[in-house]
Amino acid sequence: MEKKIIQSRYFFLFMLGAATILALFIVNRTTAEDYTLPPRNENTQINQAAVPVGSRLQLKTRFGESWPWDTMQWQDVWTVVQWQDDKGEWFDVTGWQGNLDSISQEEAGWVAVKEWWAADEVLGTGPYRWQAYSHPGGNLLAVSDLFYLADTSGGLVTVDIELTP
Image (cartoon, rainbow, N blue to C red):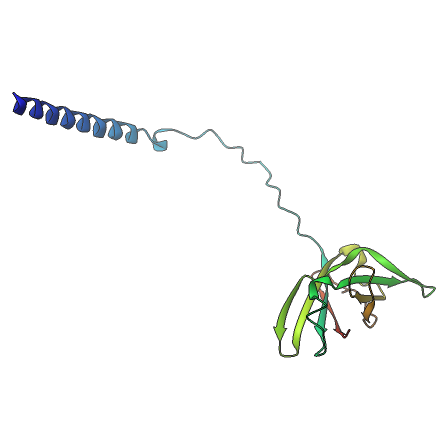
């Protein structure tokens, strides 16, 4: 009797497995290839993302050999871009102020970078200068030479300064 129960269970499991495989086969046969796509509108315009126009302004800040790394961190350095009007007065450029972005070791030592985007309408303008402070509202560490923004879209102007405490 026990042998018949075991055989019945095996038969049941076999039939259940066969039914499952058959069901999967039937489901698999009804795929997307059996369906037709709706008609396409060939006149649909695809909007391309506008490519930003303008140029980049990059400050490369080299830290002098005497830089006190234990008391002054590179992340605290605050940079400000200023522009000069026709009367010779300097004004901070709104939005072009902030901490340095990154630092790397180069042949000349440790160099930190700050980069800004200049919109197309200000290309070729100037003069500008870059100031570096120990922190926001802190001591002035360096002032760059005068520079002008790139004349063409996609250009890059790099301004180098060296910081000494």
